[in-house]
Amino acid sequence: EEASRYTCDALSSAKEIRLEYEKEKTDKYGRNLAWVFVDDKLLQEQLIQKGYAKVAYLYGDYKYTGRLQKAEKEAKAQELGLWNKE
View 1 (cartoon, rainbow, N blue to C red):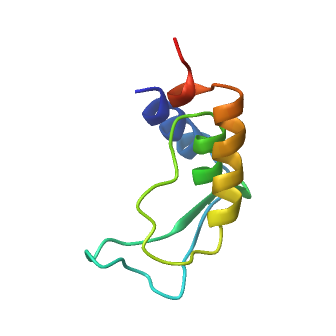
View 2 (cartoon, rainbow, N blue to C red):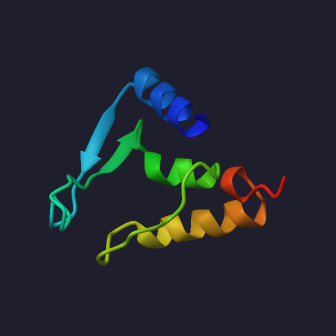
């Protein structure tokens, strides 16, 4: 619920939303794959930094995977969101 609210707020208040695609625009299930930039900030990274999401289901070598994994490691260390032990 928090992740959904954060995402809706970020998208609705954005001055600019930009999609960046990998070489392949869809995954093996036919789903669209895009990096979402909200006012020049990577939305997926922001969600992970806050502990609202985690890195999972990687079926290839994607451009920002390293950034996302680093953000997840930091969120875990700070016990944010999903990583909160309470």
